[in-house]
Image (cartoon, helix red, strand yellow):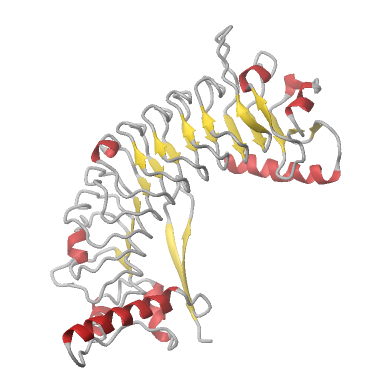
Length: 411
């Protein structure tokens, strides 16, 4: 639905560049400002309303959404998009009736809201709420009506998710690219199936935060500051787990052993060095398909004995493999490698292993090895012209259906 709203906005934004007037009726009703909306008469027939524009010159104002959009008049309005038009949401403290508005989809984009408080947003009927990129620093308890099914607070300035600050009935919550450092116990809706906390400052998530999320299928924690995995053993319905681009060095045995539905574990771009990492992962092997990405870690060798790899594919490029053991690893994983692993060694300009042969004193050699590994990883990570391996996500909730494409060419 958000995609449909975005399409409407993009279509209508063209009219802003061609027409200089107040409110226009196209596929949607498009108004430059709330002041223009007050002059517009045909509100009874509005179904989709867009206020503001990406490049509007109209200054944002303080708005009482509940009063300004009285649903005894806007009784067909189901989709509302507000762009760069609001610098404060006023609280509506008096309720004259229990009239349930028809509004289902609400998007506020690039406004200056700072604080989302109680009685500022329409209640009763909202199902999907997008508050992306509004400079929000705080969301107060009970700010949202409980029946909001999907909420997106991405690209804001939140540092804490407070208890009771999210809709209790939500199935999907995204708080990507904020400044999160803490989540209070019981702050996340118990019925969540999709949770995206990528791009924050999180170092750890206490068990009390995740303990009741037993329906969670997709969890994204990439681009944070984790040094170890959060307590997720009880999340038995996980399909996608992404903790890439962190500082995880070791894994705890048994973390995934009860997750029969897993299809992706993304541990890429961390500091994992455990040679028995695949045994430690200990996935149950019941899922029809599982991709495990360990790309760009610190792995030198892998223990593959007594290991069932049925239905599993591994992404291993960018690790500083020991050249003595790499051929054996490659042989044993020949039917379980991603295309990236197959094509990488064919590119002579890119290293794929290191010769760990000591020459000189041990302390001197250890220092040299550290430099070799650092240089190796820098070359592999920073050669987009030579080697390219991208992850493509097809939407199912927030993640899911993941695939990798790879190309390696000489300069």
